[in-house]
Amino acid sequence: MKQTKLWVRVLAIVLALLIVGGAIASVVVSMAEEAPLPRDRYELTMVWLENEQALQVTQRLVYHNATNAPMDRVVFSAAANCYRRESALNYENDVLYTVFPEGYAPGGIALDRVLVNGETADYGFMDANECILRVSCKIAPGKSCEFQFDYVLLLTRNCSLLGAYDTDVRLSGFCFQPGLPVNGDFIVNTPISFTRYTETTPADYEATIVLPDNYAAVGTGVFTSETQEGHTVLWRFMAENARDFALSFSKRWRTFERATEHGVSIRAYTNVRNVSSYALDTAEAALSLYEEWLGAFPCTQISLVQSDYPVCAVDFPGVVWIPEAHWLNREELKRDIRFALAQQYIGYRAWTEPVSDAWLSDVPCTYLTLMVTEELEGYDAFLKELNDIVLDSIRITLPGGLYVTMSANLMTREEYELITLGRGTVVMHETRVAMGRDQWIRAMCEFYQMGLEQQTLTELDFAEAFHRATGGDWEGFLTEWLFNVDDYLEQQVEWYE
Image (tube, rainbow, N blue to C red; front, side, top):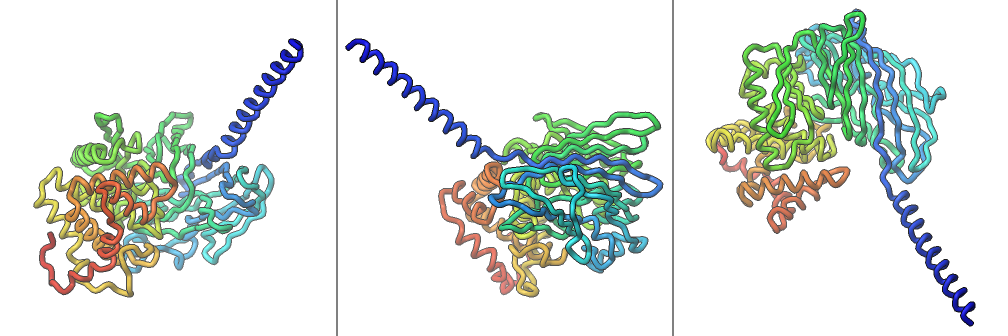
């Protein structure tokens, strides 16, 4: 009888252990299934061919299929090929001469080969301008493969988003980036000259470039330099969780650097005399406010770079290209820096769709720059800057049925500045007046924090951020103002408050 009880007890213990072990195994399997895929990883190895005005590139990309369906291809942006034909250039006639002062000359990508997992791949350009590349592959859901591209980037002498001129060599949109996979297809945006356009998933970048030792380089991420034989320098860039990558280099810059009290390195690259301290002061003061309002700055270093690009300031994660003319105009320089620092928060770290929802980044960041003006220079300076931005936009009838939230690729640069930035800033101001300054700032903090928790911020998230900040329902208020700024037309506004 005692032996029977003993065996029953042993059997119960064994069954209990099996059940517990099975439960643990089940949890481990479940966690493995739910664990997110690692980020895509780029490796870019580049050599500057100074005499040929070209860049030799080997690009490797470990790409992860994060969808629930097998892929038989990946579609890449080949934006650099928009320089292959004049008809593909993304500039209106009024600025075409400014960005190509010596006239158009063809450039773009000379693609040598494409490999998938070490094997020669089937690939081809999909459009007439050769700005979209399709590469055949087999990637199961949740699996990865490695692409390799060997090519030479032929740069033209220009002041465009990609090229070489008197001050700097500019490289943006120069490498092959996979489009965003949506419902079995890929979103690949064509370049836009006045706002962000790259649409891809977050990735880690490791890039190296060999330059003559009389060049300085700057770009996305943390970067270092190492002198080599033959009067050359190896520059290395490391960027994590970035949705875009850009770099530039020059023989003309002088470099100035300062660290903030929270350890952010601010660097200025310019040859304009007596302006570097002003740029660093402006960035440090604005960054201090943004950290107070939104939280820790999302980059360990931010670089302010004098560039030949003349259309507007252009920012990428951790680096901002500012036209030389703006370095000579302190008011323009101040606005560029304040806006670019805000967009490192909302636009890059907290991500909004760059074309279809461009306003979700550009409009709040424009108003945040005004809030910095108010804080540092007073309410009168704030009102003057506000009126500079909005007066023209509320005095005109909108052309062609365009409105604030319209996709950026449907507008010219002038329309975007008038409608999206101008009228969008009116909407931000009316919202701020209705809820109060502190609650508006709290809403921007909520919006930013929501972006840290999810892939893409939407219009519904924007309204939800105001709800969380105030406890009220702001969706109807925002919708009313976004589409009814025309009410001001009947008032013949001379000064807007």
